[in-house]
Amino acid sequence: MWPHVVNAAKWQIARTVEGKGYPHHLQNTYDYLGLDSYPNAAYSGFTHMAAMRAAAAMAGPANDTTGIAAAAQASEALCLATMNTTLWTGKMWFVLPDHRWREGMGLGWGWVRCVEWGEVEWMT
Image (tube, rainbow, N blue to C red; front, top):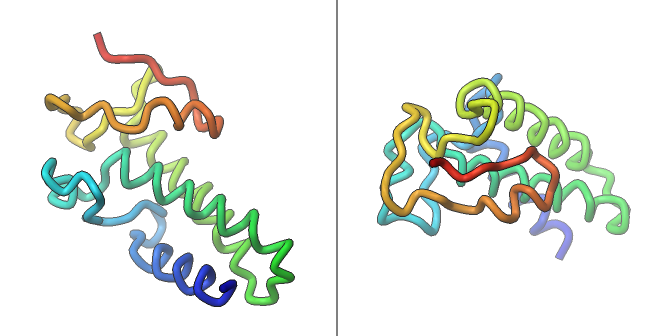
C-alpha cells in the first residue's frame, strides 16, 4: 500500500505551483462552486496540506526511503506561507484569492482549527 501513498503524494505535489506550494486550478469535491477556475482556493489548499501532513506522518511507520516525508513537509509549509500572504486577512482565510465571499463558501473551517493552521472566525 505504501507505494500508492507515495505516488499519490507525488501526484499532489506535482499539481502545485512552483515556489507557491498550493494546488493550481485544482478541481475538488465542491465542483459546483467552480473553485478550479481560480488559481488557488482555501479549500484546495487545506486539503493539500492535510494530504501532505498525512503522507509525512505515515512515512516513519512505513520505513520510507523515498524522501517523501521531507517533500511533503516542505510542500505543506510552502502552501501555508503562500495562503497566509494571499488569503489571510488577520482574522480568517478568504475562500477565494480575489477576496470575494460567495454563498455556500464557508468550507472546512472547523477542521482547519483542529490541525492548528490558525484561528478562524466567521465572516460577519
